[in-house]
Length: 368
Image (tube, rainbow, N blue to C red; front, side, top):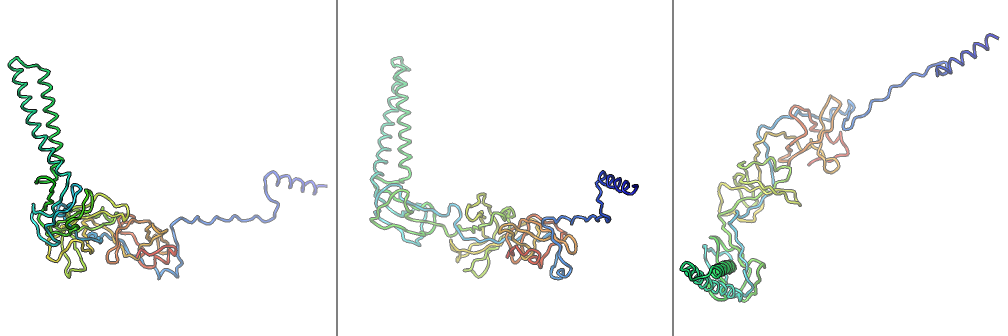
């Protein structure tokens, strides 16, 4: 009788406390530590295949490389087209001719030129008449025999004729000197005739192809197309070395200006370089490469240390301890001679994987 009572009491206590009647308590298991994104641990056997190097500041400054071309300086190239519709009467130059400012290049027969010049002559004569009428009304008013209303009308007429003459002179100003239908295109600067795209009898229209191009071959510079990410590293006055395949020796120069507009296609900005000397063999249109020195102290890494993830993100692996590495996104500039300029993302003193980075991240691509 007592044993069933004790058994029932035990069941009641276990039910109240939520304990299991199992004779052996199940030991608690600790949850595995959460794996952090970008943190990688490798086994001891793989460590010999990974090399790390401490990051140090490049006291020699950055060295940027960019494609470049030889071009005329601003104002050293002029393209002359037809100011009015007409026909070519004569061509006074050939390609390669040297010309001086004011030399005749092409003569055109443009019927509208006579109309524009006649308008100037007519407006000039009307202006003289309007000035005389105004002076007459002004004297008559001073003598007491004139009417203020007529003086005001003469003054208004004079102002209208002056405006009309200004418009006519503006229309005829680009025609140059001459009479009737003839319009002579003249060289605006000293230089060489680069192209001649017309012949006698050819019909011309305003806004069409340039008839003659004149350029000064002594006024040249080099225009480098620097990638958007490298533009902040370029400074005016920085020394530049220009390498052209057609020349045996590199040219020296300095940065004269850095473009403020980024092209939408290539994502580059023009950097204009003034050469220390221009040789006789230098020609506009030559292509080559430039090496631009940057005074900024930067960090450089071997190209194999930088990986590309997802086709766009540049990353490096930084050592945390002997077997643990952290993936770190970085901003890099253009690579030169196997080394990459790192703009941001790592600091001097950090240990970066320089050999075996692809073993750590098999999903990434090498930068070079």
